[in-house]
Length: 113
Length: 112
Image (cartoon, rainbow over all chains, first blue to last red; front, side, top):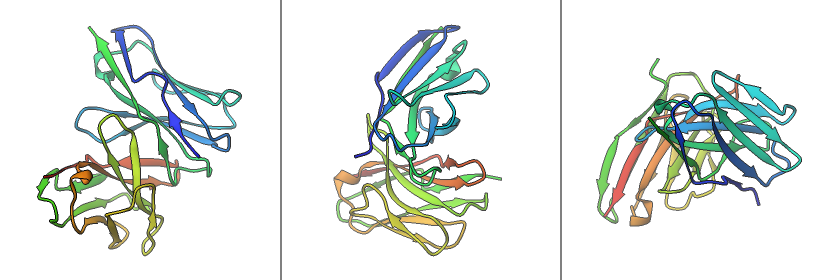
């Protein structure tokens, strides 16, 4: 069946360092992926997405990389700031749109000053 | 433009009690969703509504019912609450122009 998982449940980095959060997916038919950020006590917030016809997409301080060969997705955060501390979820939808998302369990990112 | 709103923010129920969680969005989205989030786990889809008048089961629908009252509102009902339904519940709506789901702030439910 479909599943989305994360390699590391927690990640601790120093302020200013770059962060990399990883995600593995199992459904080779997935063609749309999203990263969400969830701060404590809040709902998930969209960060960046990528479609399967791309292997890289950049936003403001964030980059998502997609490796379809090994079914791996990563989120890179440049110059990590204390405000980046949160739980990050990857999600996939293989129907070609965000109609029904399958979420990973999340990685908790802690940024140390 | 408030986005997705949910009420209540917190609720404590006794086993067997019923309640309805409310969700509304003012972004004119067609699709709306209900998820639950348990500690250490990602979000799991309970029910969704692709458009006004339609609802479909998600991954964990047992013990829940939903109503798509109109385009703006999508409610989740627990007819007879159980401790296993203690969770944080999130509502979301979908912007089809960008395929992005927008989430509400959540309802933290405890069933004793």
